[in-house]
Length: 473
Image (cartoon, rainbow, N blue to C red; front, side, top):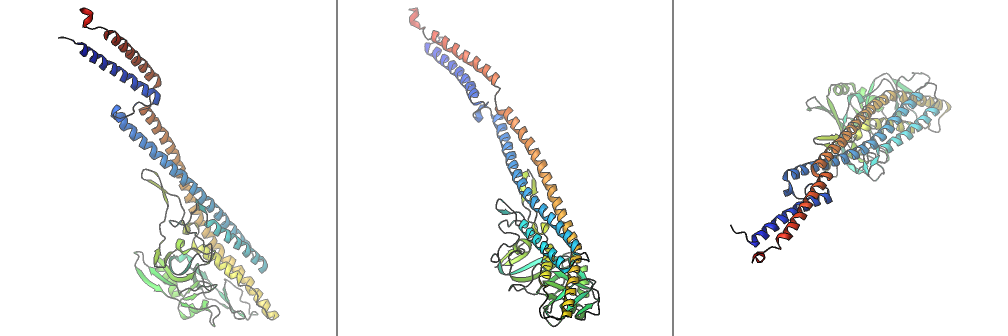
């Protein structure tokens, strides 16, 4: 077979190009630190690289989510801790005020202090994280506590649950017949026959307190209570009549005497007769529905706390947990909802105390005896008001302690997940590095060998290319 110069040259160039390609590949690996630069270089390494990079990217996103979840929960936990401390302090003040030796002035001072704590509680409820209200569920743009009188103007229809344990039982009622004609409830008032202006009735009174009442021009419709059985089927309704505190009849005793429920708009109280009380206790669940036309600064935001029908729209509450995805199929709720952190019943209790104290001014133009009777009436009334609130406050403290503990447990879980994510990121990063990155010493040795082979091929090619058929003529 005849070997021509063209064949020799082509074979020489092919081999030189192969050696140059090998040297260039090792040079690219050295300069980039990567084993491959195109999927065609090694499809197996390329597919594994994509998978590891996806894993690292997912873990890094989960870490960012965990960091944000931790920050949100730390802000929430701080606000809940402050509210728990405030509730405990309020309970301590209630116990102090329930001391029989305290004067009406001392109890009014404690009531004023409780009012300041009440305002601070509202501030804590409006805590924000990155401009979002942490206790507002999905409606993070709406504060749980109204911040100005123009923020909400109705009419709006509110629906919320009532609980049998919220039914307050009063064993005795005192009614002041003199000026002004106001009724105040309390337990165990001494039936002193010398105080003829105060009538004490030995009948149990049962009542619910709503979070709103008619004041400062606000109007409320008569609330209707609907009762449900365990299957959620309606089993009856309670529709009270409206009676004012300043009317000719005592609304607190009217319910029992006439066997009819009574709504007192000035206090937002629903007084139930014994027949309705039995129905309430037999029901598995209760809802109350009523309409209001305004909500004032410092009051509960209906959009956050209650099922609200407003301006043709319906705002529901229910389960509004903000869940952060911290792993595959791992979603953690980071928020505490308004009614869990600050039940509307707690708000209603403090509003009731505030209204009670604000109405305790001794009217002018009383005789000396009437002034003494009025003073004694208010002193004992305020004493019993504080006493009655102690048990309900302890229930609120227990409720918030449970929610606070739940938040702490979720924070611990997020911390454990964060630690695991950090370990996963290190593991996937190491695997990605082992898959993609070069062993510098090994590649350098191969590059030197490839370079030497390329140089040798060039030298041989230079010598062969100088020989032609002319040399043999």
